[in-house]
Length: 295
Image (cartoon, rainbow, N blue to C red; front, side):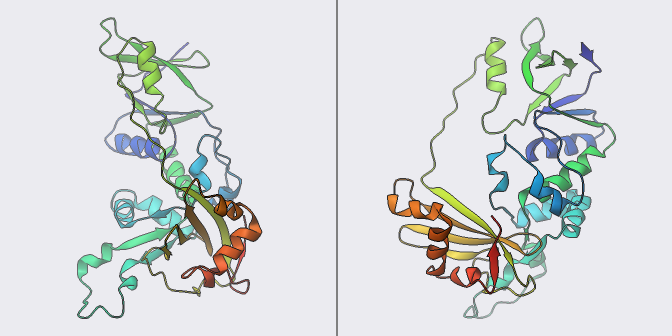
């Protein structure tokens, strides 16, 4: 079965795919987004984020902070998304508040207004972007759609269509692979006889262990954000950082060496709490009078 042609097919409905669809639709192109996952839940974003299961996005539940360049991009290019995440409980963070008191002669400049980070959980931000893209004229988002092949022209030089796992053929002169770090297009191109250079990859040098908490009083932070958009430090053999999120939530993250067996205790609630209570810059955040774990 051949579906109506689109100007561009975007494979993958995560941040990269959605942002690509937005940019293309903004220029008047017809876009079809093919995402293999189920559609996200409806309802308020800050609540729907708790029940949005993303088996193909393992980093979905990890802590995220949108830095100042991302905030500026949202404000300028996607103001509706920015307003939506603010309405959902996201918290702007003035990075100039982290200027040390010992910094003599600091004078705030007009350009410092751009030095704002945004404390928000990834799924809350992604839901706002998804809903904005879904509402755009000229954009169609299809869920449960897995691309299994590319169809090239007889010369093997141009893409003509994609073929889904259900056998649907979707004509498009341009296909964008936004399927994530595994880049599914490498397999499609190889199967079509197109030489593909191998990816250069390596493991990272640490493992991250994270837990989510809720502040008893979101209006009162228990300690300064000494890192501007976070609180914490880098120590001799580990790092510990608090990242604020929306609606009084924050994540405490430990980064440790992957082959250090002494840090395996962080995988237990008791071990995690004990380590947090003795770590400078983060201990105040896990005081039971201040916050309670929710993960």
